[in-house]
Length: 341
Image (cartoon, rainbow, N blue to C red; front, side, top):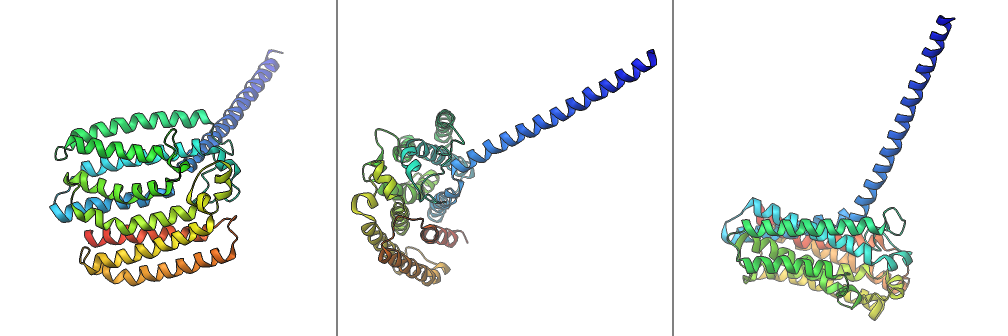
């Protein structure tokens, strides 16, 4: 009788142990899936595909400073980019937060326009994004302070000015009360931020000089290329933006005018690029790639003219967006390689 009871107790213990292990495994899998889903949501809302181009533009500025002064500080370069990365990430999250109304109404959102839709799909909640923005602002302040301390060759007033301008332009794009994108100057702010500002950051952080003509001049083609791209990105969004009272160029003047303006900027970018080599502001082997840039411009103009003639603007234009974003890359990647190699 005692032996039978012992066997029964052993069986019961084994069953309890087995159930515990199964529950532990199931709970672990559920936690992992929940963590993975949350991590994917944070990655998606961060929109990491927009970060390589700013890094290239910043690096172009640093390379330009080296070509002029033969000085390069790796610590300042890395910390400077960390600051700019954090500002861009904070700006992206701010845009997602305050553009919720237009993103929710947007039926033409894509990889490059219309937001990440993470908040719209309730994959993250507003409180989580607010917390992330607050944490990023603290990190930005800390990084900026350290950068200011180690940049002994840059005047403190100049460094603080550049750091403040980055925050002002980045966060002001959608953050009240500035809300540049809601007052008709969003495209200008983006173009200025992602071309002369980033290039000058790379240049000034290394050299301490901002009055030199070189970084300003090499930013001109990129300025117009970015203005073209951001203007086009507003075309598929114009219905949702208009409903949310977001005054983009496409909303103010209509999609057709936005496309025409974008085409003009594409041409100006190419012509100013040619001028940089003609006047020997940029030199070297990269000049032969002018023909590739012109070919890309021709293809892009053809696609945009077809879009304009179709008069079908309320749709996704992912192919056009890819072409415009690749067009931007020529004007920062080619001069960077020509200065480095």
